[in-house]
Image 1 (tube, rainbow, N blue to C red):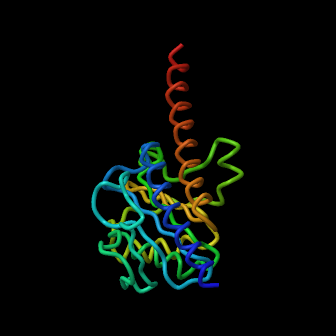
Image 2 (cartoon, rainbow, N blue to C red; image 1 turned 180 degrees about the vertical axis):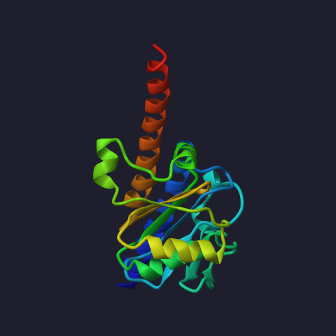
Length: 202
């Protein structure tokens, strides 16, 4: 049993590091923005990316293990400044084992000019449950974490107006797919808007 837990822990840490690099290459996080957390199913602690720059160069030893009160259990770094939002999600969603927070540029742009985000692609319509776009709250604040925990019930994605996107899932692949699909859909919406304006000129 102990060996299995160690294997799961190592796999989770590896997936967090790889996922952060993937998201960086897609332009959904920058070297200093965005954060990821994941836990072993049913556990009362999680692994989370550290605060600070160099997100695409993270190593497994850079990750921080914290409990659901934010206390550091392992690691030499400070946990992400958004740790409150992550733990609040885990507290209210026992089915969630991974949280991905990104700064999707097209999604942010679309929701800065619209009140709601309504998917237009088939993939997004199938994968995404009802999406709520939350009003802007100060990043890393307790106010933001409470608002997120209240609205993440029965949803797998939230858009934080002027800030970014949160995707949750039973594992990291699912949570990462959520934020990626939202951005792909936002790009399609942007292209549709551009060409509809051009078409109206003729």
